Image (cartoon, rainbow, N blue to C red):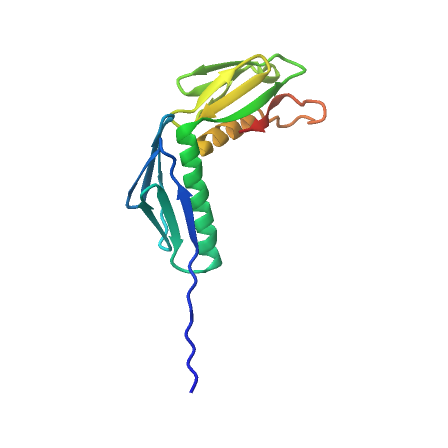
Length: 183
């Protein structure tokens, strides 16, 4: 009589925590503190277990299903981005392009006002995402900075989307703000 035993493989990822970074785990909530600030995020999964031991985080999948391995990789990337953001800012640079009407911009109370876009009388308003996301304006560039990678990326995307032209030929009207570098 032959009996087979099924061996369950589990995926494991480890993340080194730098000396000047403090990571705390409370249930599903992960907090990363560093010299650049504090970032909090809730990572919830029934199949991923996150443990902190000494200066390492261990993320372990309780099953070997493709869905859970993908989730494990996503959680690992999120935590690595949080650690990097707690040490230095992420930065997106947008190029301001206009040929018809000069674009004027102004930041007030967590909002970016885009004035005179295509000669419009009312400004286009883009709300900044994230508490610590900053926007720096120069003549032909807009720089979006902050410790939270997703907040910076979403803010840059909203600015680019906020200057989208509808109802005109895009080959003639190429005015707008376009992401030219990410970092």
